[in-house]
Amino acid sequence: MKPQATTGDDPRPLPPSGAIGYQQGMSSLIDLYAQRVASGEITVDPAQEAVLPEFERIRAELAKPVKKGFFRKAPPPPKGLYLWGGVGRGKSMLMDLFVDQLDVPARRVHFHAFMQEIHTAMHQARQDGIEDSLAPVAEKVAKEVKVLAFDEMQITDITDAMIVGRLFQILFDAGVVVVTTSNRVPDDLYKNGLNRQLFLPFIDILKDKMCVWELVSPNDYRQNRLQGEEVYFTPIDEASRQKIREVWEHLSGGPAQPLILKVKGREVEIPQFRNGVARATFYDLCGKMLGAGDYLALAETVKVLILEDIPRLGRSNFNEAKRFVTLIDALYEAGTRLVCSAADQPESLYIEGEGVFEFERTASRLREMQSASWGKDG
Ligand SMILES: Nc1ncnc2c1ncn2[C@@H]1O[C@H](COP(=O)(O)OP(=O)(O)O)[C@@H](O)[C@H]1O
Ligand SMILES: [Mg+2]
Image (cartoon, rainbow, N blue to C red; front, side, top):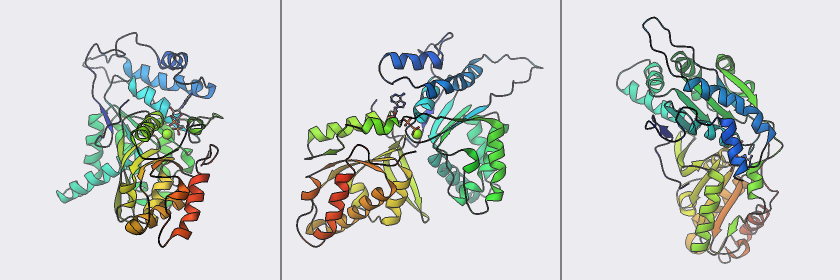
């Protein structure tokens, strides 16, 4: 699939009637998964298979025709699904499979991007003189979709923690079905966060409205996908560009969204992001006034960084080189995987000027980070 920039999510309006896959008698998610296994796209995984009936339950329930009648009340919406577990287990892949088969208005969006959008809309509403800005914002979201699919729900920010309870209550009251992936069990969300007691009702709402499911697969497929794959491409030419494109498509599995990191009240935009994989050029990350805090936030948020076009470093681009050293340190500390294209091998990237000595560590880290077993797990 060709990555393309979107405004931060994949809006999925009602498909045209008769579109393939939306007709009556379409295949269930269980069949669809089996088809992908048969075609060799994925390998069969019992832990993934085990959760398919949960997704299928929601899909089938939502696909039922709505009986209209004066006295007939709309049936209660199905319970959503909170799918959690270690990295690379296939949570996002399964959620995408599910969202692709829905024939009701649905939105798949990175949770972080969604919350940012909510804050922006609330800010706008307050400027328009609306004091309780959350309710109208949440109601607008609820009107637009039947299903919200969040990738990577996590709460680290107090401004998010303090509004999610009411936000989700409004969404659920409006009949929105929520499906989400997360690395954490609900009880561990916003763990050790400030004023956590005010956050606890949100956890109860989640547990009430969603079926909580742990994906306990022994396989980290993301790591497997990178295993034996080259991750360092040099020189920078059409061949390495093509390789990078392939790795991106292989790992991200769909259209990109920009990722906006909030760092000390500022916003840092990473141009392309999906499924834990971020993609940027050297210039995007090291050619701008970014610092250690920004790189740490990035390293902690993404699982794989694809960094293109690392030039030769030295006197002429000393500041960029210094930032690059800081970036690699942050990725290294966080265990974030790096796939990159560079003008030369790590040891030959920086050979003249101040900072040569410092760069030895960076070069060695760049080497180490290329090994198949390197990186964060679980
Ligand atoms: N059963 C499988 N067989 C092969 N590849 C898989 C399988 N499940 C997931 N993958 C791939 O592994 C990578 C990581 O999966 P992903 O859904 O992003 O994991 P998670 O969201 O749990 O971190 C993706 O590229 C995905 O397509
Ligand atoms: Mg994921």
